[in-house]
Length: 549
Image (cartoon, rainbow, N blue to C red):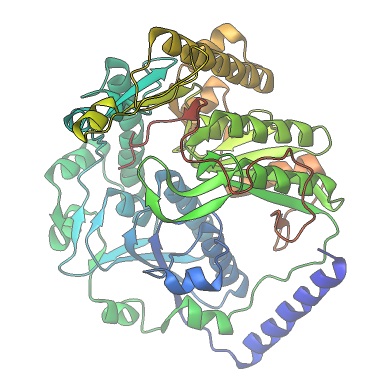
């Protein structure tokens, strides 16, 4: 992006601020809708996808940060009202937004959370970061705690003649236990219990500290929940009960306007022309070979977003070529995926680091392949509630011979080579085939550990106690040395700016990098439409439903 383009953007902001100052009448409070998944950055959707979306997309953390900064910069609104409804965000995203709200309050802004519908534990975890928490009279506080559930489908598959032969490096690598087991293994249960304990403690501490209620008393309230609004008010979990139309009167007779309306009368921070800035590259969703893509609807085990190795690598190479990009912020929101695809992205990060600093920012999940891709970075920043680690690989060999028989299908195959049909689902895998798959698995796991040991400087003997598919919270990972620190977007951006020698305060410090619109990177020739969802190689992926409450 040129300095001339930056200057034009700055001029537009300046003229907008003049108009807002002279003609705009800002509200007393700005209503910010907080709903949906709260992705880190606003997605770039085409016109067709926006039109076909069944529901309007919720805000991103990037958009909410910008709105909070604009309200503070203008200084005329007293604060913001958070309209919390339909919230499905991960715990690390909620932690990030809580941090932004606390920062807003420390700078003099006032935050009011309004619960216009029944809310669960995660929504209240966010709400109690506000100065005041209000609810509709018939709303219910479903602060019932946390629950982790995995649906094991082995018996259901067997009824139709299907089976999955799952090879993993350790009992802790339980990503596909749902296909091959009828319940938790001892190790998987131990891990899930530990993660639940960590997150539950975080919830109790947040409520206790924000509401001034002793921890044991909060625990008793959780065990009594769900709580009607009136009862929650008496218990000190709410500050008031009112209908939405009564909010202006309760807030002192001021006008409350939604952000879409209010932004026209609010001044925004100016954007200074910059020559050098931090480049942003995202690894979002299941890591696959080929190009990144967004599926029309989420698939079991695979989700909706897919981060293609070719697309991510092209963006990293664009950052390497761009002389105005001083450092790269690699945002990772992924449970992992294809081991080969993860290694290809890791290689690009390792190459880029020789020329420019790379800082990883972990989202709700940056585990297994999601950890792999950033292991070579200069610094790794995780949220306390991030799920990370899961250093290990797993391989699934489907077996559908029973289903073929039930359907009356009689496949016959001719082959040369003992393992020519190694992944043919119509046949039972033989001992030699399973041994070959185990060798492949062990090789991938050995390489994974080498990448982590080299990037993080962890001795192999200590790394083994952290690896084996074990999943950690961001805080546990910090103590173990798997990440450098805990924090959010601002902390990761600050580190990238320091390492790159650029100022990152104010708008315009970050430029999003994408292979679209830039010359194609000289990547190895591969299937440009991406690999099929399941490939022969091992997968670096973490369990799907651990603490995803």
